[in-house]
Length: 325
Length: 288
Figure: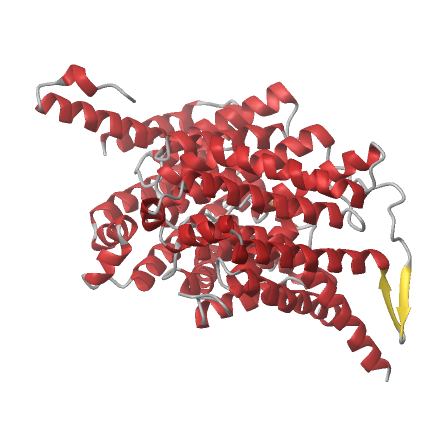
């Protein structure tokens, strides 16, 4: 809570004082990716079902926004519309697979994402491969602004809401059930926890969160097309953010987003941008190393280290095991 | 009459496509059966094998002559990946094998893009370029060779797993890891071997596919996606199930591509996956 307050304060100061467009863009991207990482974390971290198609839920929001605005409707309507579409896709993907072993779900996320991608690229009303350019407007009714300050405020609101929701998740019945299912689904089922319905609930909320981020993204960039919203590359980025910071931890996605933004900018500056595959090499190597050596990510490793140190202190043998993080 | 010819043409196309899918899928299902790991980088193993075949072809070894070399190289590659990487994933939480092999997918695609660029590359003047005409049907020679090769190799793998001592050890590990260890089976060795054989299967598939397909960094993706569906449909771990399912998926894809549109040919395949998983999660021939 203290950390959250500090971030909100820092974010507000940034939004009000900084005028450097590049810096503001970085802050916006950071907050947006932290939200997307947290959305992924709900189903893949807390529930333990790895999603490889998370970009389509982000895309639901972005495309809802694009469709509303190009049809002369209010972009605010895109928030519920995108949420409904995202939740429906989540249920279609999750209902057959969430009661089974983890890989059934992971394959289904790839499959549904591929179907959605193929459909969007062939349907004229979804803009095919060229996508949408949103007409320029201004003001809160149009959810568009000439300068970046209000966008940062909106991203901050979304980030804060999602972090608070995640704190509530950790303390709620749903959160305990998810962790019980993840630790031992047979034992959890034996005490009467219905795996499918609780995980489906978590997955639907996860999709809704990603969709909200999608609406904000579309209103910010005013351009929506498959590669920037629903393609596999976006899903890879979201999973990377979730994995790097630490799956199943409150602050993991924020840390992951920070690492990602630094990495992505570093790659773009040092190696001449994407398209040559260097970014994929680095992201892939990071995921591999974390999976093989520290499967709980950065925050997970710190938590483990602290716990070990605290345990060691209680035993009066701090020097024996502490500080492995 | 014309509709009937079209139907027969699609049927033959579906069978030949399905056989190639089977060869990609059997390696995946073998690895899953033995060690409960779905290798999400399986398609990238295929892509690597295709580049290897291309390299051998440029050295003067045609796709079919290079095939045994590609198989051996991929077998060794699989064992090294198991020893260095997958073994560590198995020690972690169950999600680690899922996102770990996915990381390998991203890494291999990136490396391929960095080294070979995104260009589509093909074997120059491949053999079997002609067309076979029979009773009004036209089939390319390459796809017949690919289909027959896939059928032979799948049969060889099936015989290996069913009738050899090592194959029996693999089935024992698949059945009950702890009991197999107590019977004196070295589970690490069997796991490594299974991973190597899984990679060798795509080594063969890559060699055959280079007869008619180009290679590029994401060339393995469509094959791997169908292979996941095939393996789930046939029952995770079942080689004969994978063969049956691959033929079904081949039909679905060819007929879907013809009657819907080529861009949407995978839609019926994935819908079949969701329906089968919902109705019969153990797959067509799998056990629960």
